[in-house]
Image 1 (tube, helix red, strand yellow):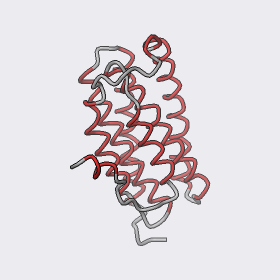
Image 2 (tube, one colour):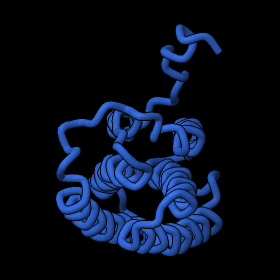
Image 3 (tube, rainbow, N blue to C red):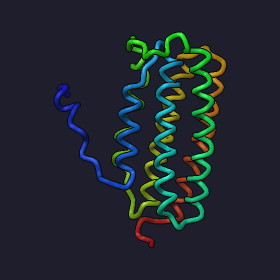
Length: 189
């Protein structure tokens, strides 16, 4: 694909989540660090912020108790994770925090990010609840994929612990979202 083609935004079904999604993808793509650890932390913060923003949107709309509970849980967990990542960056990457020049540390994550973006943009549903659930599955899968990349690349004990926790939590959330979708088929009100 030529660069010109790459800059054309994908045709994206406009949903109430589109602005939050675009903001997240742009922030993630811009985030790099001096090491795979730092890059992962810098990409994961806007990734989690995207989940927060999307969950706040679904909370405004939903009447579904399960969706409300899952969205609240997402907001709480991702807020804690963002704080933890910021603390790690302050202590570990403080020396390089003035936006280090990209040193190719972006590369290991590029495939996972691109796959997630396409999956999220393609995810829609019959209503806001379903759309949120489908987008969150793709979003969480992206977090899983990126966490697996950093586990392969990283020797940092804190990063490894956070990545492992991300994998466990997101796997559980995906299962919960899939169960909700299975019990709320697209045709149903």
